[in-house]
Length: 471
Image 1 (tube, rainbow, N blue to C red):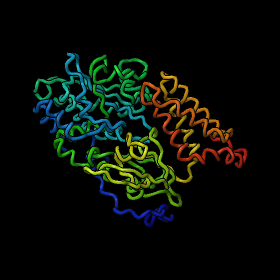
Image 2: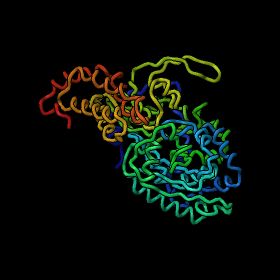
Image 3: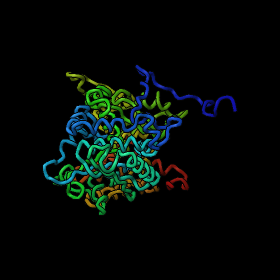
Image 4: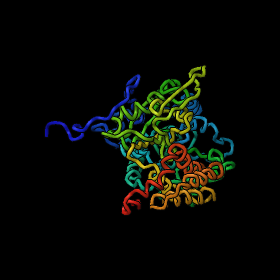
């Protein structure tokens, strides 16, 4: 059928005029994702230069590879943004115990959907990056801990590892060097808390995934089986492959200072072109990403709020201004940003009170009721709390109970203050960061949209009786 599609017939949204259009994508990790004709078998990977970097890496001193990662400035892509080279440098190499490496493929943060595409479409990139990291850290045994809800991904990884072993890239006497390392795939049981590294380790050991107290149980010293352990995200290890290829110094020149390399953004919600996009870190703003790249809001609507780093990141409200000072080069300069002006990197998002997290950008337009959106988030975190710490176990449950009661027809004006009072008692009082993850949405929603929460009770009463209950 020729002619315009139905969407083309609708009025286009008003798009602000930005000083510069969005830059082109810099696809490094996602270079072959969705590429026509590219398949996930080893023969296709080898035709595209696969495992050449590993062949060169195993001829270099391991300490040299670690130094390259340190020079690159690579920060973890799983959520915390901790420098990868520093993490490797903290590993206890004097204890005489074996060192383990765990690939955190437990991609469970709502709004995040990048690692699964690497696993499904380019698994050998992950395996090559993992083997380089293992060789650099003298690891003889590595595990890929994959989310339980991704059975096809687990099957793809098992097949890819078998292919790599057959070619001598994994297993005994890798590439004739005398170095040996095995990789095993371990499926989780579908628990969000297993994304936390010590909870993941407990699960891998066959126990309930209760996160460990740090100190003393820092994985770099007392990790898997009480041995030194490195836990890296899928995307992070893919970056390691490219760092080993081009060198840490060259890698550090991409992105921006302290936010090097590329970042994959998973955009979901109320935009015209949701999807996954890869850009140099800090080289694209939120506005460029949402308007230029994702096509702006749906016809006839406007943006209301955005969560920039997965559901646990603090929400940002469109129309707000953020002012302060930031370091540019050697100088401190003033900034005055709207949400659209914020560079998409770890530091800039932290400066305005949120975080880059896992790169999951969740967009909400003016049709979204923020009370009901928060009720959905609270239900998730209440269900996923491991229950080990009282503030988190009880706090997440009570936030869920209060917000659920509100949206099911029994809201009170004082519920806004009650919700925030509960949320404020959780952060800093738990073993792991889940306490912050479950409380930050409530805290930020109530700060940014307090008026909507306080008016919700009256607004609910004006609805017809059959619409006061949220289904």
